[in-house]
Length: 191
Image (cartoon, rainbow, N blue to C red; front, side, top):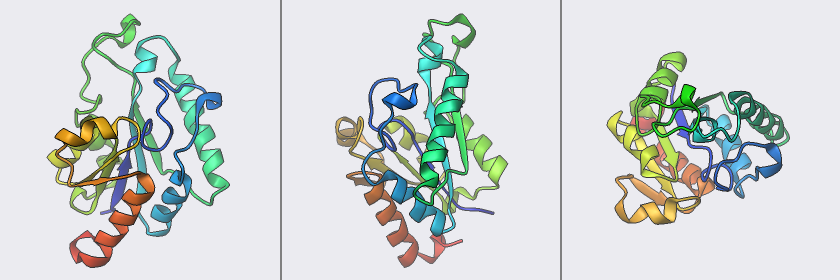
């Protein structure tokens, strides 16, 4: 079994700009590419799980989401880093686009994306971590037995007062510091 760090995208890896659909609107949060590289070097699977309601609201297409993820990968290569997989949920119960108007177990805080990624990559949740800026990122991680970290970027500062996260950290770089420190001191977190 593998260990993984499940990362939210908007507000965790990139600056929250209310529906980022194009590379021109994308900006890494300071230190994010280097943090991903450190996880790669520590032999974690790095998996992004992201709700993408912009598709449901007709602001972009699924092809746009996949193109943005491809551009992220290209840019990460400059840092010697990569993301192992991206999973996204384009559905929303109040979608403007009828084809995407529904409840979905894939939409966080649902467990669908997590469960699929764990099957696809043979991930052991007990050895894994979730990093996000919303409690909808944290709740499924806790439900599945993972260690959870809420970042204060994006919506994190608003969410911190009522979070169930195991740790609250300033950003994804500090989250990786915390994850690596936990692995160094807890043999149960080392694959």
